[in-house]
Image (cartoon, rainbow, N blue to C red; front, side, top):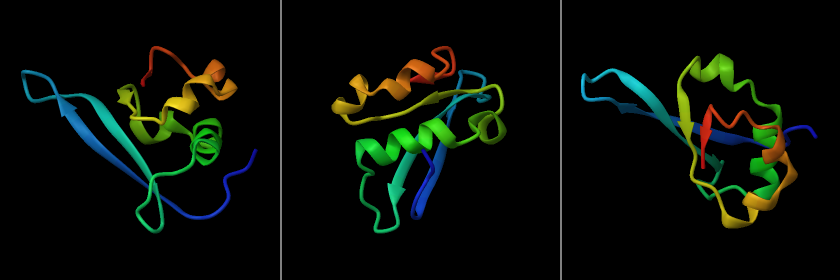
Amino acid sequence: MKIKGEFFLSKTPILDKNKKVFAYKLLLKDKEDKPLTSNEFARILANLRFDKLFGRHRLFVPIMPDLLTNEVLDYINEKKFVF
C-alpha cells in the first residue's frame, strides 16, 4: 500500500507537569484541510516512519470510528499509539 496524493501532518506537543514533551497529538489532513478517509489514514499509518518523526514519544491520534476495525491497527505498536 503506497501513500498517494498530498497530505499535511501536524504534531502538537503534549507536555508533562515539568513542561517536558510527554507525547504528541498527531493530525493528518488532505491538502484541502479536510480529514482523511479511513483508507488514506490507514495507508499513512502503514507506511510512514513514525520513529523518525517522533522519536521515543507516544502519539495521541484522533481517528474515525471505522478505522478501529481496520487490519492496519494490528501492525501498529500499541505502546506508541493512543487512539
